[in-house]
Image (tube, rainbow, N blue to C red; front, side, top):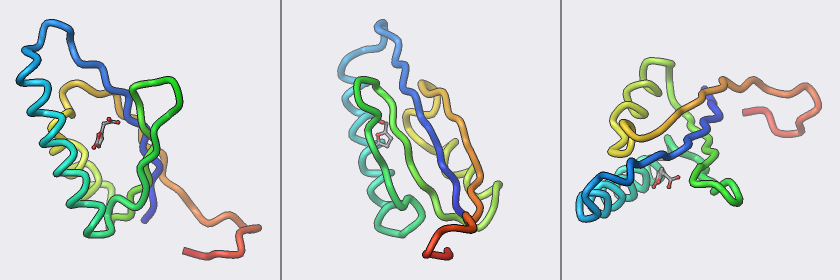
Length: 94
Ligand SMILES: O=C(O)CC1=CCC(=O)O1
């Protein structure tokens, strides 16, 4: 099942910069592991925003929720999820 996920990152300015740097490094490793596993198919920066649009390919809503809630930046993000279906005009059927 494919999902479009928008993540808007809002890190409090009061957070220790060293902790922020560690969380960002952990986030990168977590996301790259999922990308290598094929579960996180795409990640795109939204121009001009500290936000991304991503495509996930997972088995269920519960699996996606587990992956998203495990993100190191999860406490500092607004996340919007949209399930995707095949478009009848697409020449690629997933
Ligand atoms: O910087 C972001 O958009 C947040 C993020 C999600 C995965 C990642 O590596 O960074």
